[in-house]
Length: 233
Image 1: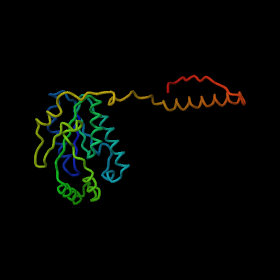
Image 2: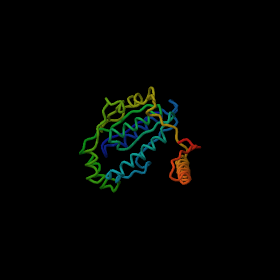
Image 3: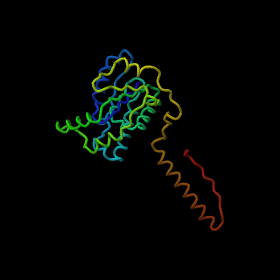
Image 4: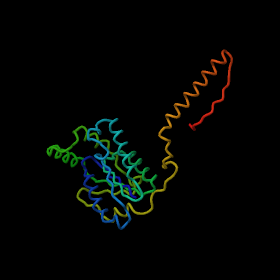
């Protein structure tokens, strides 16, 4: 069922809002036939704060988050992505996963100002909890791409001010309704067998062997040989 993408500035309250979403939706599970609420966050995907300071590490981290979403998304459960998700292109990738699963998708963004985020990060440092370095924080704030309700992959969009609570009706309306329609572009193709590469390599070696034998027998004369493939490549 629904995929809820929580995105926002660092230290803007994404995890707090994720917990609030869980509290709102928990009583609705049995009523609406949902089996579970799955939260995909950096901890689950094995992503560290330091990963956001290295391009290659961050790219790999996004891949792990995407894999977790693909693992948990289904027509019978709710999946919430509690991660920075600050790149609009990555939010589009997550939307495509929802579309491939023929489920609904919405985006929720805690609206916070830069100064408040910096103050919260400083407080984390003082409390000896996990925090960003000043350089990391400034770079993430600079790279933040604001979601837009006019983009189909970010609609419905639910902005929540820091002092406000999430409105139950607004959230439920956003995740209800018809699921996104899957098409050939978003449907996963059938997987090859696990030994596909091994079989292909074996067959290529057999072909090369036949060519070398035929070449040796023909000497300086040209020769044509017929190769029969026993596996489909």
